[in-house]
Image (cartoon, rainbow, N blue to C red; front, side):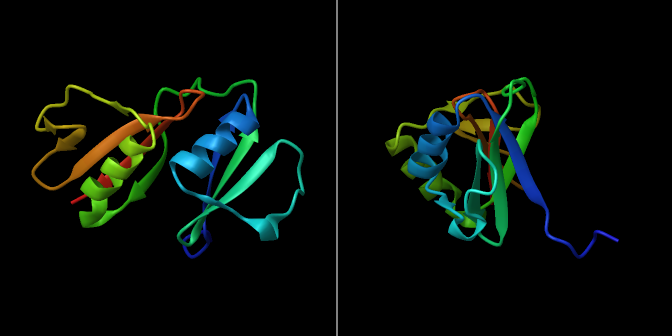
Length: 128
């Protein structure tokens, strides 16, 4: 039923304007102008063939798990450096089978970083 349908990440934030600066300026996502201002307190971003809805919520930042993941392949080092240059800071976790190389957690088959938006929502970037 849904296997051939696009999914949309939805991320709750307390301050839409602060989120707009982070998602637009730091992450470099483009707002989806075709979405228009259909709902007050909601911003839609384009990310590849996907969309991300950022919406105002009093529950923002309460999830302690990853809310969205980007798979960037071999570009992970370049992307992490660019994000760091824009002021992003990365989370570091102790994980069995992974070692930390700078801000990137490296395992046998993957590389991954985590960062938080202004509300503490956890974002992930995976690579190889």
